[in-house]
Amino acid sequence: MTQDSLLLVASTDKGLALLQSLVPDGRYPSVRICRSGAEARREQLSSGAGMVLINTPLSDETGLELALDFAKASIAGVMLLVKAELVETVCARVEEYGVLVIGKPVVRQIFDQAIRFAQASHQRMLMLQGEKERLERKLAEQRLIDRAKCVLIQYLNMTEDQAHRYIEKQAMDTRQTKVHIAQSILSTYEL
Image (tube, rainbow, N blue to C red):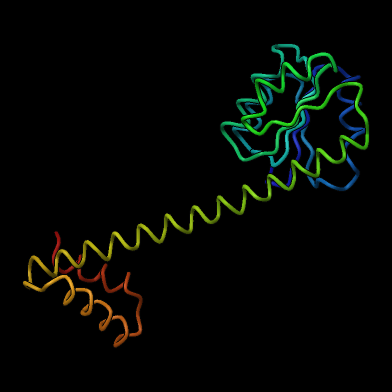
């Protein structure tokens, strides 16, 4: 399953039919159905999903714990359908984790707005995850360059400014990245 896939979790045929009737046709290229919390957890571990809809209660748990587990462990949009009288209580427990709670019986217009909001939140999380990965790569590269500077300082008695300029000049002269030059320096001087 991919990040644009949907995981429907419902224990009963009626609950599953409700979820399937609410999801717009063609919005998700891949739809997976699970009948219990345990099965849903296994599915998410093995293949992941971008959106998770849980119709409570489930046969093996309430569904609340499942929603929290998904919200904490993934960037999937998570929606929980609960009885109308439980909405406030459930919201108090899950909304800080970004789980959207919809009361049953479901009002189609509210559901459509909620699913669009959940999708937008998921897309935002994907962008943030990409930015985080980019920054982590950049930080790792900077650490590598800094290690190379330390090696130049230690073995060639350069100052930090001289080491910095040396790496930059080598990168410009050889038309290579500073990271490549730093790796070369490290492989030369470190065992």
